[in-house]
Image (tube, helix red, strand yellow):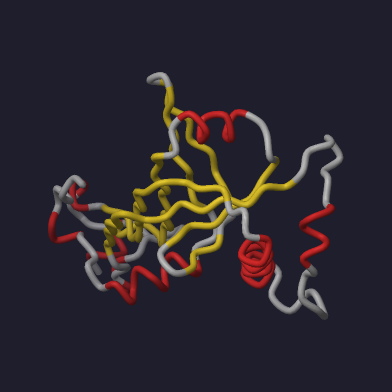
Length: 182
């Protein structure tokens, strides 16, 4: 694990990191094989130290995971620009986390169904009037003829950074240095 270079931006509050990983919407899965990197954006579900994701049971991502299951998963959210009369002090408010670990295919149908239900609850809360049955996951085949596979990245380390928003200094359209000097 590499230390965070700008130590004052490190977030070490595990509860805050957990909450961030639970609520953020998109993460980027970083894979590499044969010295070729591949990063793919994903919907995901964070549970008990693991990033769950799903997709077709075949394709570039799966081939790369099969060849090298070590991966990282990056989540980042931008909260706006922090304006400053000094150009070099203009900054971005954000939080980000990088989860390093190993990917395994979820073969237990109950765990896979629970992960899929967790994603549904996260992305379309309250939409369905009953839980997804295991049989749906077992039988589903995409329009391209591929079965769905569920994977999890089991974390071995997590690093997080943040630069909190400064309400009185956030940029908004129409804000100028002149209005800040008044």
